[in-house]
Length: 182
Image (cartoon, rainbow, N blue to C red):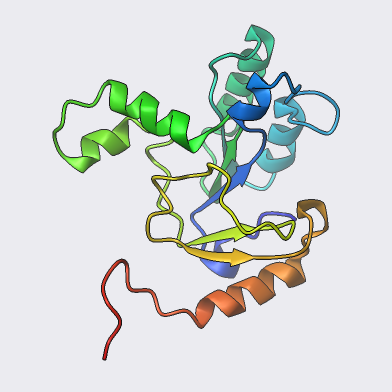
């Protein structure tokens, strides 16, 4: 699914899961065929004014880290929307890594230690593939997110599916932890 421009749907950030740290630890090649290719991805989004932020660097090859850094540098000045690619990512690992340096001061300090502290908390998490779980994804950030589960596989998720998801989301009453009105 292409990223919709901000003026089309009001998005500031898009976060796309792309290979968990658990999969890497099991020996899966997160950068193999049909996996992340930072250079190709960056050139595709750069032309649309999209800023790319790509994943966690620990435990991956120096060559791939270099490609990720080059892709981020290529798109750094773009401001249409920010695309966060959660590569080599795990929500528990993110929280543990942030906690290691946290001194117990305000929540903002903890947030600053997350992998992408500039990412806004998502209003909506869309889970494709018919699964109804968040799979260790954005555990801190999704505290007050709405979830919508779709049966389509990600490669088949269309602009029309996205529009239907946004329509369903538009009917939700967001309370951010407050009780419903009586």
